[in-house]
Image (cartoon, rainbow, N blue to C red; front, side):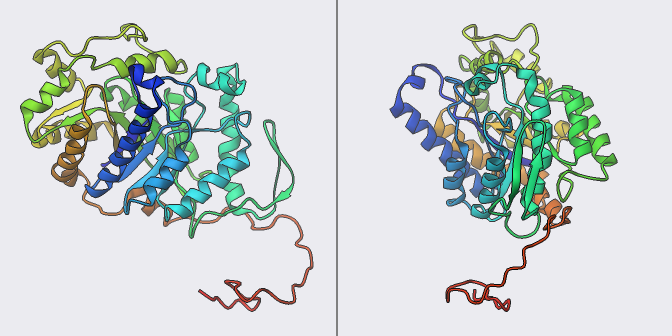
Length: 406
């Protein structure tokens, strides 16, 4: 099992209206990703949301990911998620940016995709029917891999067109392309993701054990996949959850018992109206005051709502998550009422004391899958014009005779 952090630009309360606080939040979240890279964490996932005050101010994750990539060495950096409606942006731009990130990260970019979180942010782009984005995603996600391969890409689809042949640039760096993922909620989406041969991102807002049936559906689908939409199968289920891990068990539990543990969840219920919520869930401005007592905290831990305690205790709790079938466990950081210095300490403690017990492979699973990549499409579909170039500038990296000058 591999581990990652999920960064979303969370900025609760009046700070959401203060640009100094907003700036500090971004600086801190960048520091979280850089710190995670030092302590065995393999993935840093960045949300993308639009107009979701307090819940997420991360509307343009690519500049942040580029900044993080330049300051890290091992950690993979992914979009969670890049919503693919052509009414939001032409699909060629999705292909271009993902390939550019593949270069800038030296193959450490993960392309997480989806339909969008809810009607409020989709309305920012004049998308007023939240159900209309599903067929759009299906068309776009299958065409982007073709854009990455072909040098004369042309497409006439139901939701977008590229009416004349174009070479979409840059191409992904080296062999293969960025691993492809999709955000999943209902069992049907998990099955579809598996059948397409792409990873499943499970933004669970319930006990993690409730996902077992959906993970099983994914594994059945991916086992039956003989023609992935990309050049390789990304057989991966990523699950989000919460963790409070400290070298001091008492301190970890004290954090879990602080006020307003659940404020973030009330924002989820406010904005994510594409995800069914249970009857007991609070929708902002209604919130829960937090975990009331030690007994309730133990019940939540046992039920799979969060992990909490000192390293050996958290490791024991984690063993049950493996039984669910999770390939990657990602924690939303920072969560409610956890101070920044406590977050940095947790990244080190969990990364050095817990992760090595569960992830003994220094190579990312997606790197291993990408190594099996096989091209699917012809480089050129249409006849290539018979053009002869007589000479190139002296600083051309490859000469007309094929000689490489680098």
